[in-house]
Image (tube, rainbow, N blue to C red; front, side):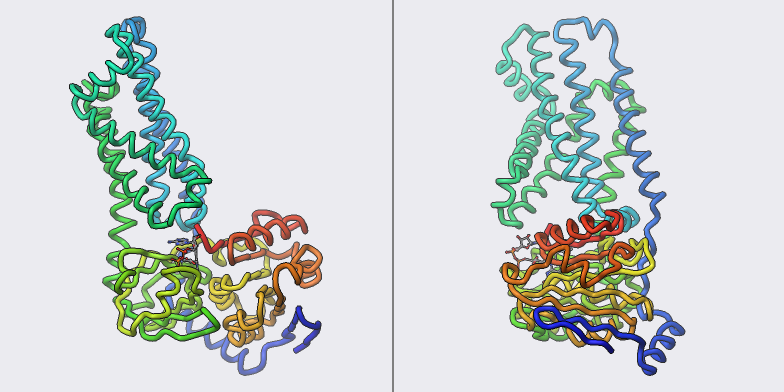
Length: 476
Ligand SMILES: Cc1cc2nc3c(=O)[nH]c(=O)nc-3n(C[C@H](O)[C@H](O)[C@H](O)COP(=O)(O)OP(=O)(O)OC[C@H]3O[C@@H](n4cnc5c(N)ncnc54)[C@H](O)[C@@H]3O)c2cc1C
């Protein structure tokens, strides 16, 4: 073992595993893991689904265009009604794609991870909202032109005498509410729970608009095949939400019957929750993943929060480690043994499957060590990982002895950078000094969002290919 450096940086390089560790490594390999390793992502599934989604969009739009006749187009208001209908179709289709993106279909989640799915969901969000809004305005203009009436009079007529129009108007209002709440300046001020409830209303909005589309959409009235196809798209979307957001988590929670076994203090404000459960060897898991936990205790049962699994499963045990930063994370420290736990996941593409180079650098900011701890544990013996832990105070380095032992078994290097952010820099020079061959490694970075962004930028500025930088920020 080589040790070098003065505070605030302590570096330890492990030259070779001790005999006992080598023996243990061999035994682990011979026995195989005690848990079921999560399957590798299959990018072709992502490609196939993208092609299907684009083909569906083209088909829906083509159907919308094909039903239009020249005489309808030339009638008063015809062009506006046509354009408005197409905008509505496109908007609804994209809204369904947004729902599919967050339904966490396992093969898709494995490719993009939850943050990747949410990124796409957010990128897409302005389109359906504005297209559906435009649909309402343009089509009202079209009908007003046809009836030689004013815009507001036509709107009133729609709501009072067209089937399902009131429901569709309520749906539009709910969508507009979600759109306003999504504006960054407003979103960052909202409590997460409020944000979550607004999103539930979006599901209601989609359900309300379903009958309106079927009953009034020119593509569907008198076109039973198109109507059947549209219904199939809706059913598939609703089915994927029900199956993967509700069904699978419920089945897993009932199968594994997780309960809190112990809450163990790790550091000031940080506790580990040890869970016990049945048949945990059947739960697919990869080091670095997280789970949405729902503790069935007073004040907590109605909300699920994401916390990484901080060690590979050791059936019948699972461990998560939580730093108190707010209501939920503080309440976790007070969980009583025996508390029932429901869960969704494991989720995340922050795993070994993302690795492109032979070696890795794991960079943790504070509590971000939880995910990297289980990722490190899954690395093969002698893989020589470079582990960098950035903490403000020495006692914030949770699992110091476990991480040291895991790095030692893998013939790695462990760097601890301690000190307040302002006082102790963590810049490109520091990172290059600590990991001189960084550019030849995959960089896994985990911790608070600011830290993750900072290290990602450092790594790419030092020449690491952006595809080799993998990140998990502890906020969504
Ligand atoms: C993928 C992932 C893995 C995580 N792993 C860990 C871990 O291993 N250990 C740990 O201590 N923390 C982890 N976190 C952070 C943890 O989820 C939040 O600290 C916790 O949910 C805060 O909730 P709160 O009510 O205590 O605080 P609040 O005051 O409600 O929130 C504090 C901040 O946490 C984030 N947050 C709150 N609720 C959620 C939520 N439901 N989903 C996502 N982000 C939320 C928000 O950015 C918020 O600003 C992880 C977060 C993510 C996204």
